[in-house]
Image (cartoon, rainbow, N blue to C red; front, side, top):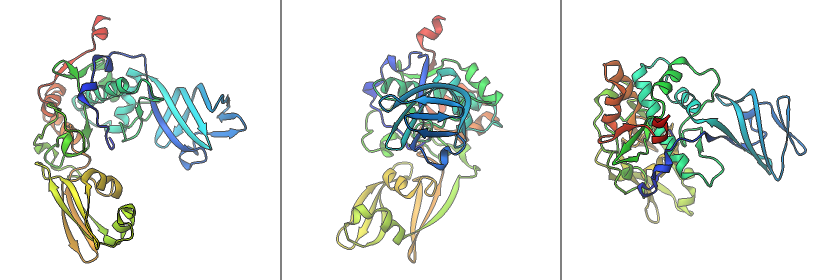
Length: 356
């Protein structure tokens, strides 16, 4: 996952995770002429959207259609029901998917098919719990969540690996609960040795997420992205933060606030008129989450370059996916894995699911 959504505990009501027949996933938003759609066979002809051999008529800019032909968008292949919105040449495409069929498509986007079953089951429960919360928060909106790292990656329901289907089936309906309420089960690729609390990553998320704590993760060592380094020119940061500069020149950058897990909570941009402070997550996303994989960094100056040495990949909150992989390889069950990263939670099923 992506940048993540910060949600108030007060809004986490039981209705957020009661079973729903389907989930609405935004799989694309952007220009209809985008290269990302080149294999989807989508084009506009007057008031019609041509989807392969299907002609869909827009009414007041919207359309609802079903196709099993398979729309290729980026790495995903999507079928079934779609809700489209077209305005000014920009298309929003939402895939409406039966909820439990949605889960294997998330696993396909988030983990490898070579992973042990117990790691895949842990990921399935975390992804299901996260999605249920989003569904409860979005009922008045056009979609429930994104099929990208902004929420959790979804690659469609076509040809999913048997591992992903089995992991979703063997945990069907299971969600994580804390004090009787569903949890927002964040996850990330690699914690770099220790997970993080939400309030130290996302400003404004100060409420008591008692199940999201700093957890030391010796299992994360050895991951391909456990250690990394990158250089960024001061001149490049000047351009990235041009809206902050207002004509001033950037002389350097330093970390001014650290979290207990040694993640940068705030950066000071040293301009020649006066310094500006940017929170850590905003800085990382502005630079690029792939270029600055995490905020567990050490920063130094090398001429006109800033040198970042870091550990881990992702925001660091919740389940560390690499640790789950290693724990499963060492014999941990998915329940033990989940208890490690979401302490004091219980594993349950929605009441309506148990009644079936």
